[in-house]
Amino acid sequence: MPRYKLTIEYDGAPFFGWQVQETLPSVQGALQAAVKAMTGADLRVHGAGRTDAGVHARGQVAHVDVDKQFPPGRFRDGLNAHLRPHPIAVLEAEIVPDTFEARFSAVKRHYRYRIINTRANLALDVGHAWRVPRKLDADAMHAAAQRLLGKHDFTTFRDTECQAKSPEKTLDQLEVMRDGREITIITSARSFLHSQVRSMVGSLVWVGEGRWTADDLSAALAARNRTACGIVAPPEGLYLMKVEY
Image (cartoon, rainbow, N blue to C red; front, side):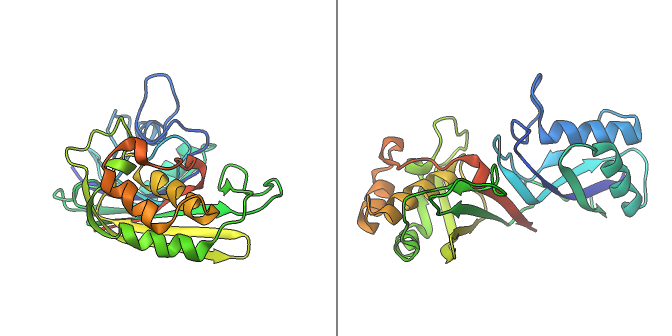
């Protein structure tokens, strides 16, 4: 039974997250329906991460075991044909050893968060970025972000519904860059807690607005208390960019 690794991009706006839900549309559900339409079998598609409702992906990874072998290009194209008109695309399909696990074999995940720092309403970026009308100091945000690098207890930046066994994570990268009115936040780690990226972004925005200093961010981290977190950024600005193996 061949195992296929799928690299996928999607617009998360129409979906209630990655994970299958009984009565609500999900990315995993749409993919599994496409697999069934192509193979005739009810098969589970295993994702590298469970993105929340409204979160997008440029490089989500999944695997699925199929009871017959297709050329990888044909399998990719067939899935894409059955995925229409969903805003989901299988970018690549490849046959991998059965030891490969989309979730557990991953060594690093890369996310990007987009902020449009403008007084004007969004037009082209509606649903794909967070509009923040108040002027942000991206340099102050970047300097404060470095306080979060390394291994920490990230309880403060953890959703109350997070099911991870431990709040300790090692953050490898957290960079804040401005290009005109757009501020991009790039972060990388082996894994993240539920809503960790959005919680960190929202707190950094408070730094950029001058409501918090870098010391305030450090104090929030040290508090290990969810109530010490700043605002949680909305999901539409968040993109899963790449999963490394």
